[in-house]
Image (tube, rainbow, N blue to C red; front, side):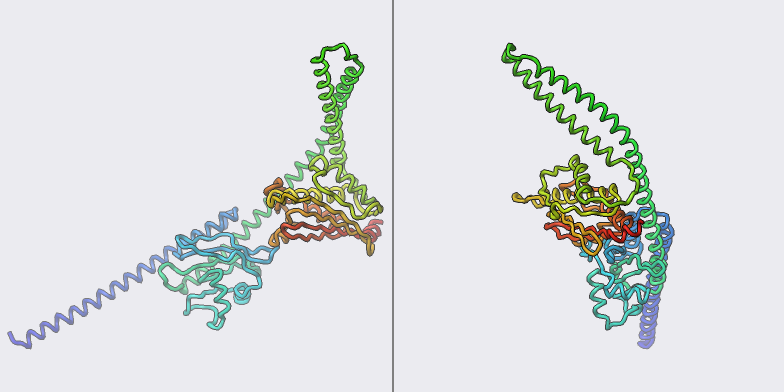
Length: 471
């Protein structure tokens, strides 16, 4: 066998081997592409099915948890978070997130004035910080990239309803570090729209349910009010009878000559007399309570007239003394004996003052519970000033106050800050106050507060304007 023939065979083997290796590489590459395509189709199918079922979920919290769970599982991203727009604070608030094994520190709130939100409003397109091929922002927008890193998010998807941005979805990098593709962008747009509609549906359902609960509660309160009138009369009759019995028993004991009785029996009679006195006193207090209930549940005739401020305050305190311990608070009237007239409805304004003083007392209880100050002296100041045809009434307390982030929510129905030392409230007190003062009396309610210092609520009643409009 010649040497040339051997070389030819060797070259042929090398060429065949090279061709084989190229073919194997081609097949492996094709297989990886098929695997990626199948994987992409699988997660796209998962997202499609999830987006279709989202509209049927009525619970907002469950919807947001499902959104973050499905996205992280289907797309296989490092983390996912959802921010909802809160109208009262004009901020996007973190509501749900899923991080897997990573420890991510998310930004709790995003201002509506942030560069990210402004960019989303202007483009109505997702932002991708880690995708140079399909990014929707220029490389010069360094501040925008900084804000994205603070959220943190590699991609931000906007959820628009008409022209309102109601939510944003933040995504981390993919687990395999591949870039988001054009197909991803198209699918994310559909997904964001579906999530936006699902969120709006859930919010509408929550709002409707809250209104229904409020109506049911109002109906129950109306029923209780109707029942209270009859029950109070019945209780008054029983209390009067018990009072007569206790009084008669005391008269019998007082008219008896106890000098000839043994010492043990005299001691027993004295204890019995003391018990009857306590019983008589409690019967009297019970009668005052039922009388107060009768006054409070009596239907208002909605009559507007000139009434004295001190009379309304007295009526409010008469009701409050059965609910709170007024002697535990130093109450100071800063308008003295001056008789200030208010034009309004007595029953409605009584309810306003009742709620304000009750809230101040609860705030004081919270401060005692939270701060535990040994030298704390509970105070409530009530000041009234007449100027420019209106009466300005100020209620100042040194209770726990309200945190800055809660100030915008105080007049929202069912929002309450009453925890810890005070019993949790219904969240309707300040809402009712604003409705009565601003809608019924054409006035104004202003609230200022500093946490751990105290609060002030200002009631402005335009006496002259309201009186002229009622005539």
